[in-house]
Image 1: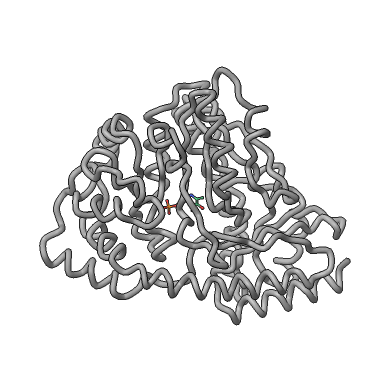
Image 2: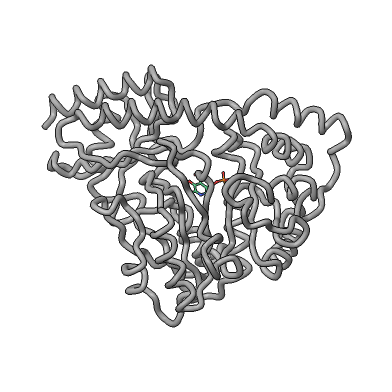
Length: 386
Ligand code: PLP
């Protein structure tokens, strides 16, 4: 029989994170530090706002680009509020940040267009870029520079096919946070080579130690060449709700709203109302952020004491990314053996790109008890094995 799948689909690979989860399916006594999502349930107040919206009749098709009152609330969200995006023409509500990214790549890339991606990186960019025929081009980042993507390195990878630079700030998997100076450097390259920047800021409210963060869209001359992507998933522990958004030039937002109309019509109506309510309760985020910071400290301090581990302090997001190469074993073998012997799940860093080799990713979005138990187990495992 004919192969009905097209090559792009037939060649899609299962991500290493999912593969790791398949291994633990049905096993007891596992501590899973591989998960990339908040361990909190969505705050009850947000759930109630959804219920109220449903009872009020938010059960019909939403406008394709999203409810205007939610887009209005989004225009006033922290950090990007200084840009005063016009809710009606410059903001679209999407199925999570992934929904926004897929629309942007579908709407901008033609086969062969290159997209600059930091290495190590969040895995799904590869699939999202290659599905419409784009080519991800990895720019190395190094632990010595806190895994920050540097303008000088980016420039070496620019060709006449480069169309987009992805900025992921704060970063999954490294927890790196780019400061204004880093962003100015990247902005200069984007302007010089006439590139679009897609700025994935899904962790922008999960930053620690009172660090200040800005958006590349706020750098001089960048508003018109940046699409900011964000979502409610990480900030409000709403991963399952699938509500996200993109903000950028009206010409791009207007046209990708038409793609969305043809793909899935719009995002769950009551969920949008719950998301609007969430933005009125930033105190809920402050509570969660304080807890994450405590957990970050526990994981960071615990890992720093393990022989053969060296790591930067994660400044944002939900992950620690230690270098374990001093143990003299590949990170794949380490993760598999640790899972087998101690039941702790970590993700091998090579899954996030070649610069992730020798590292592992551990999430601190877990209970303090589990983090402490996992640290004891990793410590004991390293002491007895290397
Ligand atoms: N961008 C990054 C960097 C992520 O880590 C994730 C989820 O892990 C996403 C986007 C997807 O977010 P959403 O749940 O809003 O689609």
